[in-house]
Amino acid sequence: MIDLIICTYNNAGLLDRTLASIAEQQVPAPIEWAVCVVDNNSTDATPAVIEKYIAGGRIPGLHRIAEVRQGLTPARLCGIRHTHGPWIAFVDDDCVLCPDWVAQAARFAHVHPRCGVFGGRVILDWEVPPPPLLRRHAMSFAASDHGPQPRQLPPSGLTSHLPGAGLVVQRCAIEQSGWLNKQFLMGRQGKNLTAGEDVEILVRIRRHSYEVWYTPDCVLHHQIPRQRISVDYLARLFYGFGLAAPYLTGMMHPHSYSRFLGLYLLRIGKSMLRTARAWPRDRGAAAITWSYTRGQLTGFRSLVQSMDPGERRLWLGCGTPSHPLPPAAGPPQSIQ
Image (cartoon, rainbow, N blue to C red):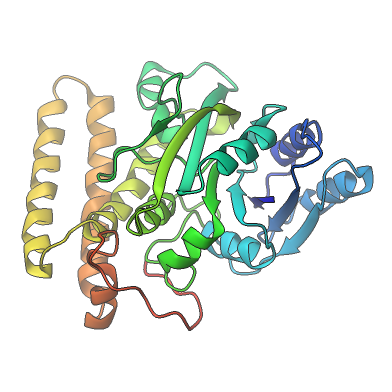
């Protein structure tokens, strides 16, 4: 059984295309699947779009759940609470799945029971041709292609993470990770392009010795609308990546808090130096690097000022094998 969770906010037009692609899925009878759409306070035609596909009856178990807490992370938590299958697929509301996506995901999950999380090939569909700078940063728009063969991704590092678009997670793995009880990063909140929650899920699952895989057989197209195809939007993305970077780095840090502080300040200094060196050669690239650096500075200051010692013990190194688990009880929380 695989549950597709689609979190959406005021994106009725693209959501319609996403659900249309899901209605066209060719899934063999032995495979059980269902779809949950989490409506995160939409004020557009989103409910009507969902009702249209429920009435059409071509999507198994399609239902709509409302989540009033704004943000991708609360919406995903809501979707997980309202589904029960052993595998969960996070499908963005701007993704178009190839007709065999569900079948391929179910087959891969069956063949790799030690896999805690996997993702597939994500192809970008630009509404208008992007400038060269945006093409160079295609991964920032969730493009993913690790080659023509399935491969297990390295057990450490942040550069090999899979995008949240089409991320498939084993339920028992995300339960063991402690992420359902405590989150340190929030996903997007309305127009606020905060980031990092996908990588947090990945590193916290991986610490339990679950495998992380890429499969080229799960192919989806990520729609990039005209309003996102700009250097300004890319800079906003990089600012969000920078906000998350100190938190994610600390999750992978196996040493003391004081050592983390010193090493991360050095990292920020190097980032500022890269910006200064790039400015005379390529001001567009330098502006992107500076956005990331500003995000790092803001995220680092927030981390130092807002995190109390108890939260720090849960956070520091929580992506490393030796770290204790978060408490199993209590409402979901987050730290911005």
